[in-house]
Length: 318
Image 1 (cartoon, rainbow, N blue to C red):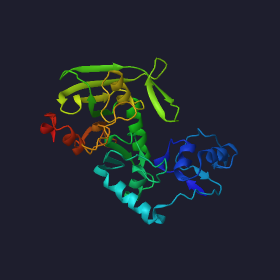
Image 2: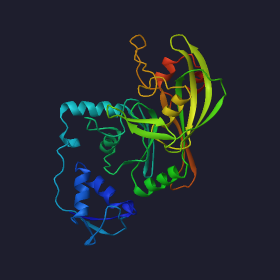
Image 3: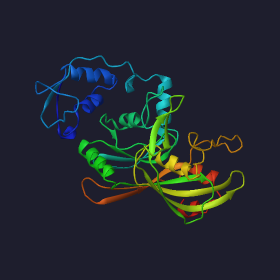
Image 4: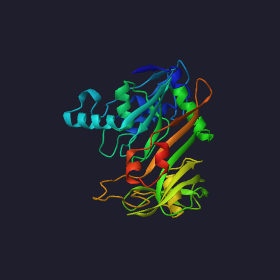
């Protein structure tokens, strides 16, 4: 296989380029091909960190792709799954090289754990754009705004904005616990990733962890008739660590309602509701072409407004 690099892949590492073009091939196989010199760029051996330039020719040996079903080979059961996934994706806006989507809770951003298709695989099918890439991620049980790129220069620009802290993300969280309305917290606690006894990835506050900061504003607090004191919080992660908001709020005795890892399980047959009450509400970033800032807001999910109807804040915003 011979591929020629265009402007969409300039600056991309060769290993990441191969991962996207050889979907279904194990990463260990890709790295072995590079290490043995089976992959050549302009007839030269390269290492995995080699960065591509426009016009370069990449020669890839024949390789057997995984039997994971393609979109055209979906059986009836998988087709039903795909249709269900599509219902959970709302495309809010589409600009040159960028999709802004509103993801429902319960939808993973990519396939795995027995599921062939997540949000990104489904969008590649819906839009017929196999090069779509996640700019950032949301946890499966978090709803809200997500950026998807179709052009590498746009992707690199947004990644740079993320590293420099120029993308502002604002979340809504319903937490158990009481905090005075209007109160502001700046939570500065380092976070460390680890695996529990079940092999699940977890995060905890630990002095040896990564620097992490979350800004929290209490929008409203009510004494819920069934669940006690519940606070509606606006959360802005200044850094972008895994599970940052969830663990930071837990560390201040304000666990997110419905967070089965770090908080309280809301499964209740009487309420007929089961979700984590964390929503990626607003996004602000600099547009690649116009170089001006854009603001997007995702509607507050009906699960929020119905389950916590006591919050007057929802009457003003919904």
